Amino acid sequence: MGLRTGEQYLDAIKVRNKAEVYVLGKEVKDVTTNPFLKPSILSFKATFDAAWDEDTKDLARVWSPFINDETNRFNHIHRSPDDLAAKVKLLRKISHKVGACFQRCVGFDALNTLYITVELMAQHGKTEPKEKFVEYLKTVQKRDLALAGAMTDAKGVRTLKPHQQPNKDAYVRVTEVTKDGIYVSGAKANITGVAASEEIVVLPTRAMGPEDQDYAVAFSVPTDSEGIKIIVGRQLNDARRLEGGEIDGIPYFYNHEGLVIFDHVFVPMDRVFLLRDWQYTGQLVEIFSAYHRQGYGGCKAGLGDVIIGASYNLAKQAGVEKASHIQEKITEEIFLTETMYAAGIAASLNAVQPCPGCWWVNPMHANVTKHLVTRFPSQISQLSVDIAGGILGTAPSEWDLKNPKLREYIAKYLQGIEGYTAEDRIRMVRLLENVSLGVAFQIESVHGAGSPAAQRIMFTRLYDLSYSEEVAKRLAGMKSEVHFTQKTEPWRETETEKLAKSK
Picture 1 (cartoon, rainbow, N blue to C red):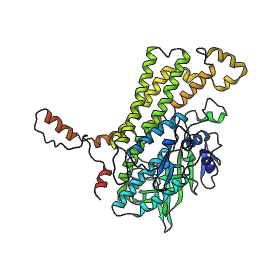
Picture 2 (picture 1 turned 180 degrees about the vertical axis):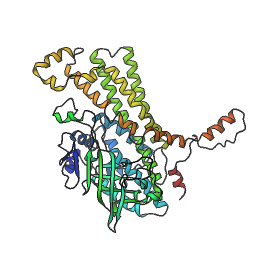
Picture 3 (picture 1 turned 60 degrees about the vertical axis):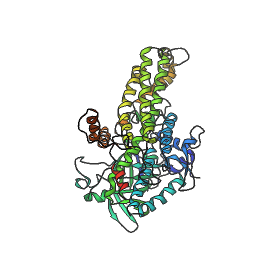
């Protein structure tokens, strides 16, 4: 069976013999026990637990025709629009369990992106990448491997293309090709959950030209590989995890990102899926971006639910939950949360099929989903701060609460209505602080899966203004050249759809 328990996952990642993982400048050998990384590991673990928990296993388990067995949805290839919708629903559900990013989505989206890409390559006569990828996919599904997707390069000077960079390793590139494999150098930045992974699936971060062919590479490599160095980034309140407490740093679940350095890393040829195939990089980026933007409608809605619940509870503790202005703010939080979720579901159920057995999200709705996510989390957070009050940024520490000399005073002056203690209030305040103001809900919502400008470029590119103009001219009684077809929306085809039709 292609399913592992959370405990089996933890056992598999305990030891790193080759890769180097650094936290605050110090090398970490066991990521499962390191206090800085442990909350992130537990969050990742929840994706494995989901396949066994009664309330999520129907969403988290799915039949794979590649191995003729069940596999974890996070390693599944979408077979229908319902599959795509199930992804969004699962992401929202797991967010309720962890209150953080669970970090497995980028690898999930990378798998599906590569599947469509190699299928399109095969339809145009290049069949070897598909053969290699399908064999790799079977391995991933049978072993239920934990994948990290790595797309964003260091990028260097943003106005220059990869081959123009003064630092040739500003984008991951092929430095040597042998009969057995390739060697790569460079770095991938802001890679979610990478220290918690078993495999890193690397994709190009942008469309390439013929001059950039050394940078047009996609592959997978074990995280514990010679030459891989992971520098875990800092986040809001991260040092609290090192204090050994149970409240302030929410040590139970969190997430991390890291800078992944490829220092002359060897990749076996059977794990190389694009090699100097620059012609397909534009479509690959388009496919991945839409997949990843669709998913945000699920996980950010789930975090929105956590924030709504915390806001409501803190209002109750203060005895103001029935005040009209509080109810109006919570209603607005609900509206913003459900709008993000609805867009993600729409992107799923209005999916497109670029090739047999391939299901891709609706690219317009996926980009709209992510653009809503760039805006709404900050609004939800602002409303939650308003409801919670200034204590959200000024509450005493858990160590003050645990000090016998201070506990009585804190209990006296921080308690609201009867039935809730001062400790209850501090716990809820800390949860709301860490979730609503954290990287996963604030910064990642803006820049994950591309900046707001990237989505605006896509949906203005996809929307056919000339068609809408001709419709308006016809209704106004002006000369119009509109040609009505069975298509409902005034949208142009994506480059991926054009490539699929050009076989």
